[in-house]
Image (cartoon, rainbow, N blue to C red):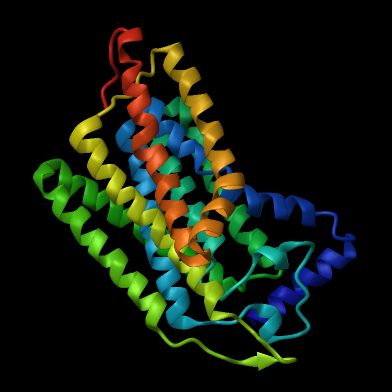
Length: 320
């Protein structure tokens, strides 16, 4: 049934001469490249707790997704059935295993967290609707492009919803027990290294087609190390930020808004130029982990340190 659904979409793509393919490719790309800039800006400038809510939900998914992928080891649709032909350039970025959809578990917690944040005020509820629509479009785009089955995206949406729920409960608990946060950070740090050990030591399928491995274990290790690196980076940066930096967003300061917008630019530059440098220095696996640790550290702790340094130029303070 899942393959038949993908074939139906594939036939539809052909009937309209792939005219929607660039749109769907852009949606998938935006979900993994640009979407994170929104909760980061929210964290820096609007509401620190709300921004962290979307980001922590995302880190939950970044921990769970590679672990589940490497336990299930489900092949991509076109490997399972050669009638499936992925659209456009999507096959280049859709590497590794299929289940669950990593694009969906990237988009849904970030956009879902922001949807819940913006629903709280009537004048921003239209943004909440747009965020939900973007989640659905991203999930659908993975089916439309032929790189994921409906099960892949459905389970990814479930994982994301559970992450959003778990994060809300965790934040409620820590509001009443703030002294326990360090224990959660330490536990998360240890779990991350346990996940690295699992990724490094587990056995991988070695099925061969036309003389080539269907999925190379080294590629999956690189992806897994990268995702876990994001979580490690957050844990380290969050501890440093809450212990020593303790910045507060200044919504009423134009200087603060401009600085926050400028601060987003290095994130895009780091993605484009710094990742290959780190992988060249440290190798693909450890370079990917180190890059994501530093990338996350930048927006959780380093740039907030700069924002705090500008406090003396802007009177008043918004509640964090």
